Length: 194
Image (tube, rainbow, N blue to C red):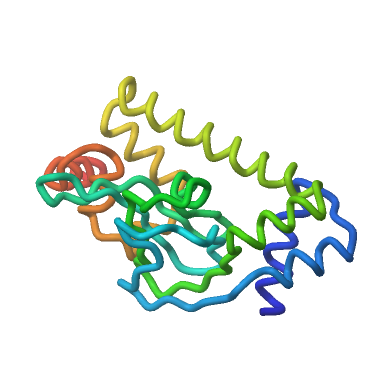
């Protein structure tokens, strides 16, 4: 846990300046967990109880449509927070599933403990506000890209944003994230290497 504590604190210190006491309390709230490739951390129909910080590996959050197709919403790699915020805040069943695409290590922050943290040390409200703002901006950019940028450009932007992801993420999930078919993604990749 010590190495992961230092990593998450490094990330936090880029955004806020907590005291040593505030840092110790924050770290005491986190529950470390290891996930094997393919293991689920959240499932559709279940309530989300934890906000999840990825320390290594990669998690994928997706929605399964009526035809049974997985529509990828997000990839979360080391340093990212993830989880169904709607389910976490309302305690209603999630419409998303989150699973490990590779062996992963995570830190879980239970909702109840997060509320305690925010009440006790409001500086963390600033930290999470910054994280949520950044997440919203990223999602908005992705929506705009879907309407205004070619599939080739979306793929190029994906490669810049996630430079190592293609090593262990099946192409069908990347295609889903980009809003194109796997066959069209293969065409784009062939064209790029030609």
